[in-house]
Every structure is written in structure tokens, then in C-alpha cells.
Image 1 (tube, rainbow, N blue to C red):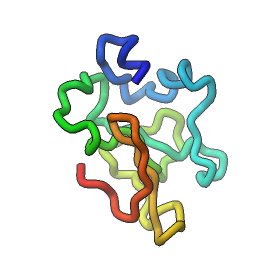
Image 2 (image 1 turned 90 degrees about the vertical axis):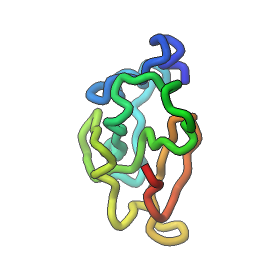
Image 3 (image 1 turned 60 degrees about the horizontal axis):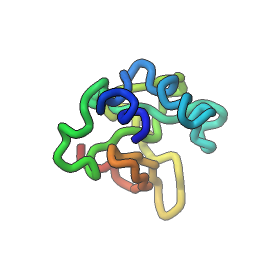
Length: 111
């Protein structure tokens, strides 16, 4: 992703991930179903690490629906809403992965 290209392959620090990505998105990343809060959290395991260290970035959860309303929320995937926030085909959540793809899933992905 662009941030990593500009920062020697490193992901942003978990404590400031919203700030880091806002430069590229020009707005705050928000989940519309979160009631005005950010509604997403960042995976602590990706705190300022090289994404190239992961052999399969398609399976590494990077950002996800969260019960936290904090700006720059981050944890070890412990704030995933249960039941899920979205009700498309059952109670589900959105997950962004380290390779950049996004999925909504009924069950949290293995991490």
C-alpha cells in the first residue's frame, strides 16, 4: 500500500494508524453503521512492521469492524463486534487484509 511504499515497507504505528492513512485518503475512515464513530480498529500485531515479513498477506487481518469508538483504536482483534454489526446474510463484520482486499464474514477470520 502507498503508506508502506513511502515508509521503507513498514506499516504505520498502531497508535496513530488513522492519522497515517488520512494523508492518503483525505478523510477519516469511518464505518457508516457505527453511528458517527470511526467503528474500525487496527490489528496491534501490525504495529510498525514490514508487511513483506508475512508469507501470506491475504490471510492477515489489518483493519476490522470494532466495538471501540476511539479514533486510532487498536487491539489484538478483541473488539470485533459479537454479534456482528452488519446483517446481510446473518450477523457479519467487515475485515480488511494486509494485501488490501476487504471481505465481510459471518465468523472472524483465523488470525
